[in-house]
Length: 239
Image (cartoon, rainbow, N blue to C red; front, side, top):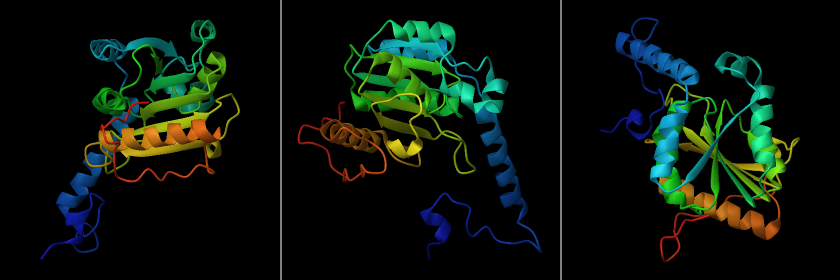
């Protein structure tokens, strides 16, 4: 007979030992909590990630948010939403219709494990620069998109680690990005990891959202994700 725990990675049917959890379940919980905490503080290896992206024929441009270090990034979320002065100058000299951004977010571990495989499935235009941001949050895409005068921003970043997985990746899509956009004005594809949404599925959903955003000139709560579980006849999920 199959148990409920066979169908999910959530902590269910753990059993009891007196008034507490069994030792094995308690130790597993503490290990998961430690992994989640470590993931939050895990630094982005921008040099290694830059090399991986270049090996795929992509052009990464390294940027930094206004947060000077990880401690400030965690204490001051607002600074993770804006570029620092130097990076603002770099982006301000460019124009691009789509701002494709990879940021460490709250789990650089997720970015190192999943960003490059996901980008391969997305098949972005190789002439499109990849803006690689250290200490970046979701809304960093609004600042970058506004500077680029982009019609669309796509932010790939590490999500807040949980007890089920410390390396979940998310994608955030925003039409007409500019400073001041709210989360209600963007769409999210989340839980991209080994036990969650696959790279192929995520790329397919992203292609649907970006196509619909361009058709309707909007993203957010009024744009419903209804991509279904199929690919185009040629298997193309490019953006």
